[in-house]
Length: 186
Image (cartoon, rainbow, N blue to C red; front, top):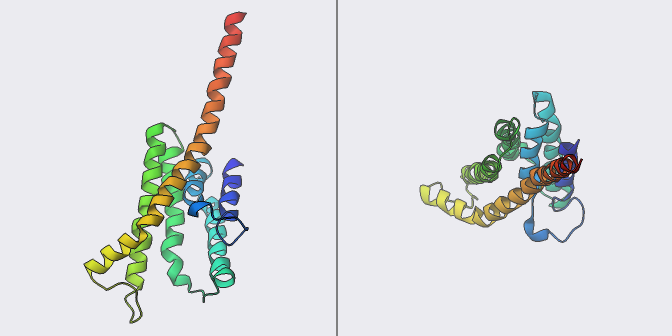
């Protein structure tokens, strides 16, 4: 249940869904998908719900908030990454959670999204009106333009996963210490 609640919260705080001040471009999407993979992503059908919800939010934001024409092909990289993030969470965090595994997820999740999404933007911009030249220099320019978003994604994912895994671990630690102390006083 917590995986679904975190996913819902991540969807609702996306800019344009519920009014909020933007929180410095905070995004809980990556962390929520990694956590969902760790806790729920056992079967393909379980991945369909979060990916479908994210796709629906992408459509809503594109058409109704940003007033752009929706071209589903432009979202294939993002949707594929949503699945990959769930799988990454499953691989890294489902069986064993450690600080090293959480930190690995925090780095690998946003880094893979940064590389895939910016490459996709660069590859898609090869039309006459494209923002980036179809050269290696154009690709580097595209990556450079994405760096501020990458930084915020790393920070956001780190906060989400630290809270999602850290709070339960801290509660368990205090409960175990309290039980140990109560047995020692008996």
